[in-house]
Image 1: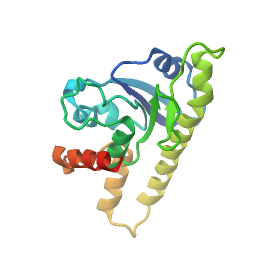
Image 2: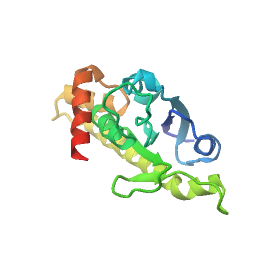
Image 3: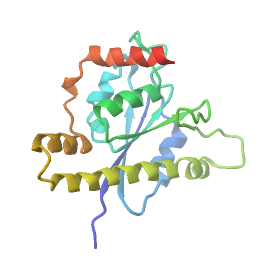
Length: 197
């Protein structure tokens, strides 16, 4: 029997949404892969750097993050930003982590934001997330698997510099030289994102 490939699925929020947590922990299934689910509670006073240093975050393959996570008034950092902006920062540091953004403000197709479940309808939260979230997670997992397959092919290519291959494969496996980007570099990225919007 073939061993299933492992996928680390991580949900990040400052105020954990019980419906999302229950769905990801109890209901979400992918028969093709061994999906291990973890949660990270964002502590605003520690700033976004704490997420970039978190072993759960750095070893994640797919992350689900709340859009309003970094807009909380208790954040001391002068540059508040959204989950979708954090997705861009994470993509720069860990390019092979797939990040999904979820929001209570509903769907936003321009920024690829998934709406959170709202009670009151005939649909239960598990049914709702099966309909709107499962496919997105499955698609993200498939992208991770595609990158893994390409990296295996890349490792066997003798025409590419070994250092470049190692850095690429390390990044895919959640190992990154985060210290290459200083806090000031990341702050400048945040400012640049805010100036765009």
